[in-house]
Picture (tube, one colour):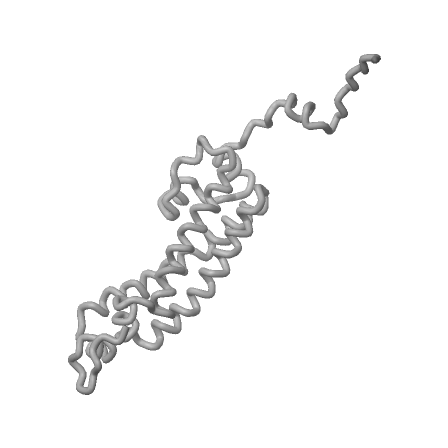
Length: 181
């Protein structure tokens, strides 16, 4: 039986790609300069980022933190739009109609950006991530202000008298069946 000669590896094979040196990764600072992104410290304060210097894909890490922040905001707003627990029911019962409407409009914006951030995480495309980060950065201040206003109204709902629903749950309303869960 004749021994076959090893055939040289093709240029596009896994073997050759493993031999190639990894391209040096760019730091967030370099990517920020290249794409016109916000300062890392400002992003870190806004989205609770850890230092990005050790990340292989720093923009992807920023997108992950943005997704986390929008997920958190969506959960708060869902409690206003569709309360499932006594706390949410109590808060919604005392909120003005304008606050509830704003919560729903803000929820739509938050969910759009949450889903977009999730789509972003399917790729490692720095240019696409950079566009997304810049878009979010431009919108986030106004969204944060609206969320803060809604949260303030939710907090303040605990200071005043109980709403109709809360009184029914506590059995303080005539004809109330008390707890209805």
